[in-house]
Length: 140
Length: 140
DNA sequence: TAGTATTTGCGATAGACTTGCGTTAGTATA
DNA sequence: TATACTAACGCAAGTCTATCGCAAATACTA
Image (cartoon, each protein chain N blue to C red):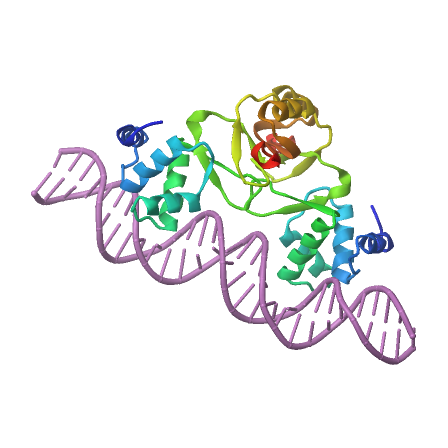
């Protein structure tokens, strides 16, 4: 969890100008447990009285992603979500009922990945693994 | 690989009328090694001089999917792809350079899935696993 | 072959994302 | 602190994927 000041220097380090919208969005990312979609970001900025239209927010997250601050992911919705790249690659557990998205940090598929890589002569750079189902809360 | 006649009976079995577009698309699915997007299907129909607009093709694949003939998947693009359901659940190996998509049939993550399910008290109904990288051809 | 229910074509619509362009505003330098 | 440069933004228009309603066409059944 970084404060406003830290977010600013994080932006500077990435050679991005620290505008109000960018600072606020970095704070949002730092304090968020779930990967965020663009609409959520726009709503958040509005709540904080920071004006930023649709196109601007898309440009901001694209810049973040290009500079390696965030990562773009896709969870079988027809839209992208974004999460902090610093948290490392991980997987997601997605509830089909309430939509809750949980991170899974321990990755157990390295061996499988190596096997596939050798067998198919494919250089694997990344992977995406998602589990879909019903979370503990929604089973009740 | 099924011929025109077999595709027709496959449609009948699924209680779908065998229209030219549907027969042609079943043939395309049967002869295709990759999951298909809607634009590819439209192009294919055009080449065979079968008129079918965007809305129709979407309706066709939705009908196929609803009847269990095909499965709808998403591969980190903001669009759907469809593949024959009969080939069973499997994973994908995607080349970032040429876009080639290869199927991986042997799934080795059941144990991991069980472990997550117990730890998080989550009922897992399905999972998606994709590997991204560079295929053998594109390494040269 | 006629009747009917399904399917299609067309047009409109919606949502996610992008782009061009003129204006605004961070930031480096003096 | 004032100035200048360039990155970033706002707005509007446009693209692409996907869906929907309705009238016309067509596959199947009897």
